[in-house]
Each structure stands twice: as C-alpha cells, then as structure tokens.
Image (cartoon, rainbow over all chains, first blue to last red; front, top):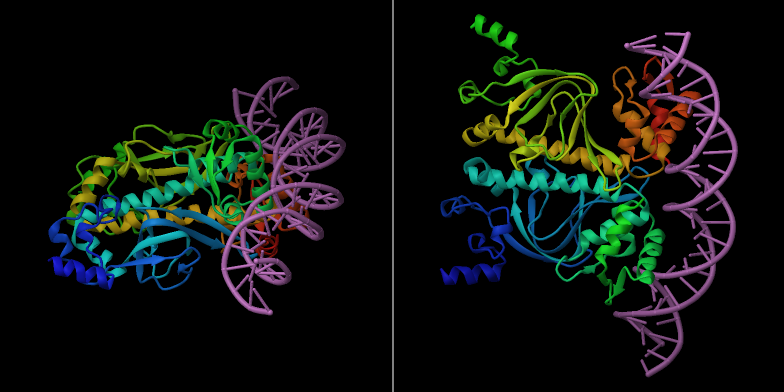
Length: 234
Length: 234
DNA sequence: CGAGACGTTGATCCGATTCAACACCCGTGG
DNA sequence: CCACGGGTGTTGAATCGGATCAACGTCTCG
C-alpha cells in the first residue's frame, strides 16, 4: 500500500480516495467500492500562470478539478473581443460540458499557478452511470456554475464601472484578513467588460482615496465597508 | 384508462407518459415502470403574461417545465435595478435549483402567455434517486442554463448597444420565416442592461433603415443579414 | 371619452472609450 | 555593472455613446 502510494506520487497518478481536498472535490461522496470503478489513471498536474488547459472546440478528453490556483474560462466574440465568463478556484471543475458534448466550450487558461487533477472523461461517465453518489456532486457543480454566471451578469455587468470594479474587488477579497490579490488590469477589464484604461483609473482612484492599500505586486488591503458603499451606489 | 385520462384532463392532473412534448421534456428518457414512481400529482397550469410563478427566496416546492410561452428569470441589484438573466421557452425548466437548495434564486415571471407542467420537487428527487434515466436530462438542463448564461455575457453584455440589440433580435427570430416577436422596450433593456430609451431608439432606427419591418404589435420581419452585420461590427 | 401604459424623440450631460504619452519594473545581454 | 527593451500600469485630452430628464404621440381598455 505504502509502496503503491509512493509509486503513484512519482508517476503523478493520484490516489483520490485519500485526497487532501476530497471534501471539496467531485469525488467527495464516493465510497470505497466506488473507487474500484476507476480503471484509468487520474493525473495530478501543475500549471503555470499563462498555460492553457484547453481551447474552445477541442475534443474533450479530460475534466479538471482545481486543487489550488485560479483558472479563467474565456469566450471570444465575432469582432475578436474576448470576455472572461467564469473564474475557477479550489474545488471547482473545468470542462464539465464534456459529459454532455464532445468538445470544450471555452478557453481555459491558468491565471494563477495551479495544481489540478486531470480526470479522463470515461472515468466520470462510468462513475456517473454506476454509482448514484456522483450525481449530487455533478448537479452541485452545474448549479454553482449557473449561480456564478448569474452573479456576473447582475453584479459585474450592471451599473457604473466604478461600482462594478468595487463589487469585483469585494468578491476577490479574503473576508478574514481583508486582503485581496488582483489580476492584471487587462484581465479585470475582460471580466467586467470595460477597457484596461478604465479599470486602471478606477483602481488607482481606489488607492488614492484609501479604499485599497498597496501591499505590493497586485496585493492589496481592502476597505470593504467603503467598497461596499461604492458597490451599492449608482 | 380512457376514463382516467379524461378525469385527469378535467382536474388538471397530467398524464406525463403520453405528453405531446415529452421528447422535449424532463421526462423524455423515462420508461413505463419509472412513471409508477410518481405518487404526487403533476399539474398542468396556464399562466398569463405578467403572472409570477415564484419569487427569489420563496420555498421551492415545484419545478416547472415550459410547454409553451416564455418565462423570464429576473434578479435584483442592491440599488434596486433589475436584470433579466435568462429566458425559458418550450422544453426549458424553471426552478432546477430547488434540487440543490431549499429556495428559488430568481423571480420567475410570465413574459408571454404560457402553459406549464408543475412538478412537485419530491417527484423529481425520487425519480432522480431511483432511476438513472432522469440524470442525463437533468445534466442537460443545467448545461443549457450555463450555456445560455455564458452567451448572454458574451453576446448581450459586450459591445455597443446597437450590436447587442441586433444580436438579441437575431436570437429571438424564427429562422424559418425571419419573423420576430419582441418584448416591451423595458424588458429588452433589462435583458441587455441598457435603458428603455436606448432600446427604443435603436429599434426605431432598425425600422427606419429597413432591418426590421413592422408586422404589427411587436411583431417584425427581420433582415437577418443586415442585422448580422450590425451584430459583428463594434 | 379619458386615463394610463407604452413607444418615440429631442436636448443635454456625464462617463467610458480612444489614442497617446510616459513611468516603472524586471530580465537580458552588452 | 548599467543600458536597453518589452510588458504592465498610470495619466491626460479629446471624442463619442448612452443615460437622463422631459415632452409628446399612440394605443388600449374601462
């Protein structure tokens, strides 16, 4: 057993049953016997910021659960503009659509260095067919995706740029220590549907008026009360 | 049998197994024995434009499949503004979230006179537990919801108002006869995140330049080629 | 017929885009 | 070691598009 675990670690093959974040993961509810249905390797992969997981239209061989880091899902417009439609963080799943369709529906790009579990589609399909304990998790994942999409529409695509930036900063803030790692102005703009200049101006303004305090390298201390006021007005 | 069907028709209780739109509906894949698991009545209900199905936060007792008509799902913002986040049409399901959460997450309002099947949550939960044939349909529904949400973000919330209105009109057009029933300018605005005046101006402009031809009562003939050009620019 | 809802249009104002310039950081190579 | 160049963030000035406020036309229904 010990040997096998070590061998797996070396080869990058995961031991899902003992996964450290299993309570957050797709396989949270599986029982011992369910894991015996997995007959293809689940790989742990590490990706650097800027790496691409897959592109829109690619054949969907894998689902990815995010162990750490941040992934952005992007779609392109006829005129070439791009829009980030969702962010995935610890516990989220990228590529759920391959259980329904043969191809991916977004570009998935690493936004902050990430560790992922790469799960062959077959494995999820088989588990989904043979054990009911995966279903609820799948429904949950879809639900959170829809919920995030709806929130982005109402909170990040409605109102003035200023309040939208404020809402985004609040959403990216750690509510315990009020700190906040932002992304590049370009990515923030692609989330909000505004230009990078506008984003830059607003964040610079937040810094000047003290709503954000620079902690270095896109790391800020956020005055959530003040930001909430800005988020609500206009 | 015949008698029972008639009795059901009178009482509004549905006979799902023989439903005319079953191929589109949630129960499309169910088999004869599955239907015996249904021990609570599924009601057919008719609603008029303006009627409300449920509100955000209401306890979710029912799911609704749309047989005909159009339902809008709305969310409200802190500042009181509202945004329509999705439209449901024949075959779509309202209230899926009650399989995951106790309460509804939107206001569901009838936009065009609708016929609906009102399905008790228990029924869907039980079927979902006891027959695998409902799972795929449920995953499919979630998938279409996410897909529509993503499209709204990229197509209806990005770019100039003019191209967004054009994209919306195209999306609402019947591709067979190029005709198109629009909603009130206010609702169109709430879909696009612009004011009713802007919407009105743009549609009036489309009429003047011939991209839309009035067929009476918010019914138009759409020049899809011209509209597609407008949708792509800017 | 009159009231109210809805659509249209005009004039003005404000906010976001655009285009441009510049500051800054960091890694590379002379 | 510093000079250089590219990427990123910031800022300014001019422009444009959509919001706003207000008025009016049209339709429907009581």
